[in-house]
Length: 345
Image: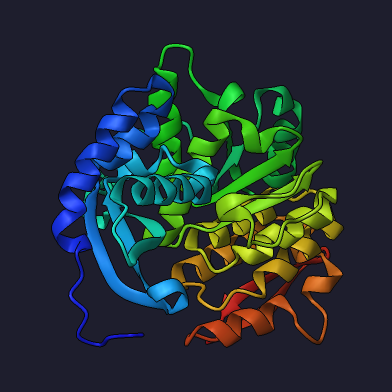
């Protein structure tokens, strides 16, 4: 029978149970990741989260393990497997009558998260919105293809097996790229979920998402996302239209807006100009400086100022600009089929 005044034994036994568990994991080299988690974790019990009155009654507790960021990265996509293993082993060691651990939750200590502005080398990036592309080494060509597709939108992408300077330490370069990225994209090909380093990258991306809101996306290329990415809808690759979808997802990031303005600056055809502008129109937080940069691009690039879809009666670039800024602008025709946007006088 459930007893509201039940005195629990687990809190007084937890320290010795955790020490015993650490000794078990320390004796087996293949369990080094589990050893580090237990060794570095701060343990906390959430008592009496559930109760089962079968066979005299069992009170269930939740164990929360808070670990440093560097340890948390070891977990990768295997978090649920690791948590279940620790739960089973603790119950095997504890054997406390009428009490069990029903679940283990591993959390990252936010105070241990590295300061991305300190000693982070960002030289691997070109100008624009920064995308880290996670892939198996065998799928470098797929990652490079995506990188080229995103580049049309002014996006700079990092592909580890292509963008690491031979004079630099590769692991530090990857970590710096992860710390300074604006978004993370995983190419889920066959075997991706089983690779050690892709798991590390996903664990890192998950932390960045939780602590900074850095978006992560998975692309289904032969397998389905698992673990942390399992609950996130996966895209299927569709070349440029797919890149459109990604850009739309990131559109309100300041660097994504800058990237689209750069793409307009480099545009060499009306259809590309129209596509970039359609994406740009969906932003809700373009700045005054970005508006001025957009006007400068419009006034100089023939593929922009002569693009019909940017100058139509409805949804024109002029309507967009005047709807986003306190200063009002107008179109000034200067001859030879050329027009410019100028401030109203």
